[in-house]
Length: 192
Length: 193
Image (cartoon, rainbow over all chains, first blue to last red; front, side):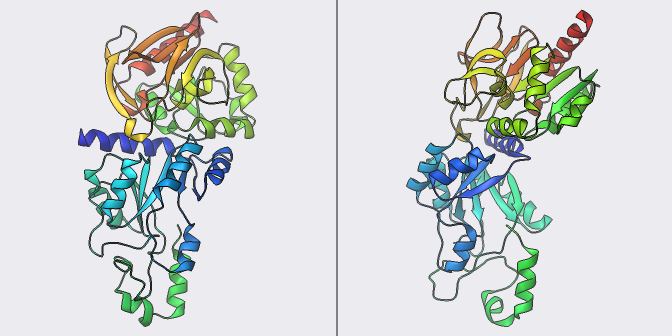
């Protein structure tokens, strides 16, 4: 049965091919996305650029807001949970989300482990920057892989449960040891 | 035999792979100029019916394909393809080709958690594996529509003359029964011509 869910979840990814998944924050935006030809919508409280600009801890969206979007459109609805935050994923599964994005856009909740996605019936999509990352996520049960944006980070004292766990260094060197050019290059080479 | 596969969105490559296993040649329909190629059959794949319906119109494919279907071109729609061909969708205002006299229910089994696989009889050709992904089913059929498969009391495969639809995805399984059935439809159609 477990393997079967994995197959069915990969099958949904196959149906999304050639489509556009649009970030939306309200039922009205979701309807516009659907009418414009989106093959799925990603329900989130703030779009990633705003999340980064705000610089505070960023969590799973309010389930009530996600449900409003689910009721507004007929296409699949996805939502993000924090890396490693299996309780958020359980909530998203309970409201029957079509895909969970275990996302580096939100504040990571675990600096070592991602969610054990094989324990879930709903599918997961994860970001990866190289084959190794992609294979680790698939081994954990992800049924779709996307390219990866900048791993989210907050300054010390924001109360984030963990800093970017896999952004290629510890938080100290991320925030103090690297020049602006390096960071600009990182920005240029990463896209969501 | 040359089969056109609508390739604007969704799981079209899976159909191509099955057809190539069966030795049938096919081509992708992505824009209007693709329709100038000789076409003996048409496959409308799974995906999102809202997306495919919009792209069909935006790309100017809608009217010419509708005319071909009405003129008797054998057509096979899976999942979203079923919805595009249905005369009426119970829980959706949108209409697309609406060439087949069936009433469909969209996302009839609910969201992704409702997706499932089953085995059921297909038109007396034996039991075949069926994969349902956020699938529709057929609530009722008009006169002249032949019911080919029923799962848990719901119609999941049907045929009306040149039109074949399945709510499930034969292109996601190894079993080739439904595709062979469609190739037979095309051969019969060619014999009549």
